[in-house]
Every structure is written in C-alpha cells, then in structure tokens.
Image (cartoon, rainbow, N blue to C red):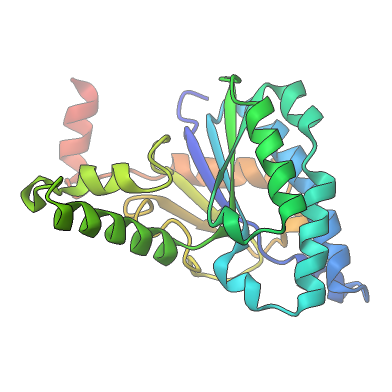
Length: 241
C-alpha cells in the first residue's frame, strides 16, 4: 500500500465488442461501461489514488456514426452524477475540446466541475473530446503567439515549461497507464505525459473491469523498477539514502 501510484490513467476500451459478443447493440456496452466508471472511481479512492484520468471520448471519436455519438453524449449527460463525486469527496476535472460538446452536455459537465471544485480527497479527470496531438498543437500555437508578440523568450522554453503549458499542468504525470480491451497502443492519449509511465495492457473488456483487475495492474506496476534512464544499482543506492 505504500507503493500505490498517485496518478492512474485508463483507456477504457472494449465496450462495443463486449456488447457484440453478447448479441447486443454497441450502446449496451457503453451503458455497462458507465456503471464500471462509478465503481472504479470508488475503488481508486479506497486505494488512495489521488488522480484517476479516464479516456472517455477522443477527438477521433467524432468520426463515428452520428447515432453512436449522440448515444454516447446522452450517456455522459445521464450518468455524470454529482452525488457520486460528492459521496466520495472527489473533484471533477475535464481535459479536451469542451467547445465541441453539445450545449446540454457542456452545461452538465461545467456544473459538476463547479460543485466539486473544493474537494481534495481525490480527483477524477475526464478526457473528453481529447487527443494528445490536439493538446500539443494547441500548446505550440500558444507558445508561438507569445514568442511572436515578444512576451516570451524562446530560450526560456524547456521541458518544464512545456509541461506547464499542457491541460494536465494541475496534476503529476501518470505513473501507471492501463488499457483494457486487448489493444496494445496509446491511441493519442497523454503522449507527452506518458514519457516514463508504466504501461499495462489487459484483454479484459472495460465492462468486465473491476477492483480485482485494478489491483492486478497496480501489483504489476509495483514489481517494476522505475529507472528514468538510470541503472538499477543507481536507483537502489538512491532509495537507500
């Protein structure tokens, strides 16, 4: 318990395939997936995870069939329950292109953010209409404008500066990134932030993900030595000091 990652990011994959395997429409998998989100948020709080970032809807997901997009937006609207956040004293934050969301969804999200802003026990970050390339491109444009206006010296730009320009600047980089559903890729999620993140891939579809699966991922994380470019002996010497 003294090696619980403080920031866990999850790519929640496999909802549609979970439903299709059961002869159901894809939306049924998304409905089941929203139930799992609530449970995993509570599990994360119980384990002492400070930040839980969930890849909810990517920029690329806007290319899905309109009916599925509308169903996903309705699900988000109907299942973003402030009571769950309040019960667990969890703050809600969102990263992504909020302007692209339907007005009724954006209003509900903004309301949840406002009503939970003072909670400090834990924070659930919803990556909504988000992609890492969008985020990096936006950051670069902002930096270029400041440099062109003369308010920023290019020599002042370093890794820390870039990290502070990202939408995730309010939290540490994830120590552990989990992807469910059997795919082994990051799919444009937290690319800058995951430079030294431990990756964990599982074949379990998101609707079947639970506390046991979360603990398996954390246990695997705990077996790894995070070296950050150093040797194992250097890390051991550092830990012994």
